[in-house]
Image 1 (cartoon, rainbow, N blue to C red):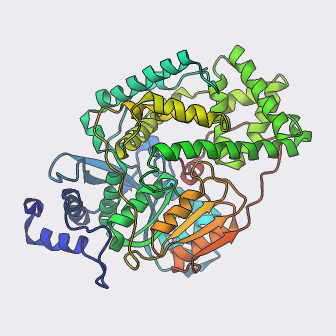
Image 2: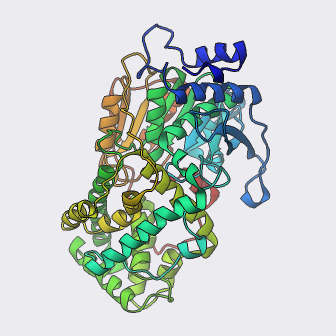
Image 3: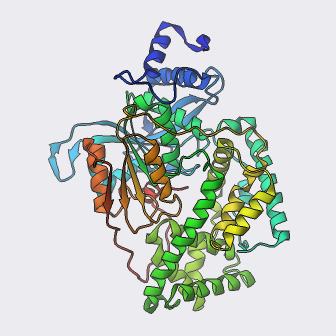
Length: 546
């Protein structure tokens, strides 16, 4: 135990409180008395509790309504050395309205801060507080200050970069379903260069950008907000470091929602999770094609899922021969349709764009799929954080033959996303800094307050088995399933049944006994949708990513 980091009697007393066992005397899981990082987190949280967060006007370039306030919280780069280099995380807030949305004369008691993370790794939650303007969130917004933040590495929170953004967003690009040996060699060379670029552009400090440190940062944020216990909702990847938080700091949890859960089994982090994700996207891609086929009178892309696939492949071939607008090739087409695997509200506009392109009008497809140079910095930053966190979190296969074998085998049954996912993660095979061993997510009975897990049965980004595994590992957790649906991130969305469970838990602490089921939300209606517009701030707030 490094007593030197305990700054005086007050610091020692606060440290004791922060790492203490639950009030009923049962021990936390795992034992939280030993590691330098645990002690460093307590020191950083004590400082943050004293300093608080000075909220004020947000930066002009964020282009947000005046009710959104912004501030910063300071955390150690390395929790094992809390007196070493410090970094600042940006934080946003909209205060609780205190008014019943159904009766403006009725006051609603404030319950504290409600902190949200949309996932990634690499996504920012800075826009999240704006979600309180949406009808589905107004009850929660009445009782809680809605708090978002940019995790370490993201945005202005000690940002990471692995590549010149000018070279990051480019098109057209290929996306071979069954890549040649020469193409594989090109991608291996790119992955090696990208991994080296992360250290060259961001320094050796890149090793401290990890899920465990994201969980520790969350505890410092809790303290800075003046919260004795945390109310938190994580979506997608946010469920993973939320689960780490629940394991490391169970007595610091008030209420916790896991929306679209990552499988936290250490054997899954992260290589196997990505293979499972690729397999699941094939199923969701089939769901989308089935929907298009049912609406052949609108789109004319085929009356069966197989016929729709033929139309898609025809467009791929044409784009490979002549990119649309000189910018949209097979890679951009695949990226646009991958989004539809996450969110079914994209289905009408994606189907319309494909239909129009095959009928000779490329404009809708170009608008929906072309690279956007103005977003290059943000996108490159998000990818850099994604890569650093996942590569740092766990061991990865370092022999290309393992990747080649596993992805070649999987692509035979799941060609849609397999190789694209492999190329995204391949820098982790050549990661030049030490990797961690994943924490065994697990809590003992009674150590953690009841928590809520939300999952769509056919979610591709975080397959449903992950939610089942998380429930098995978090004692007392409850799983609510949206049956027959596949949208990624279901809390506060279009399903009233799901939202009823979410509101009951967040506002009143009420949960079903162990599990509950909801019918699927209504499928999107086919329509001659308007061409895609940039995401609004509220849409950004609502979208989980992984």
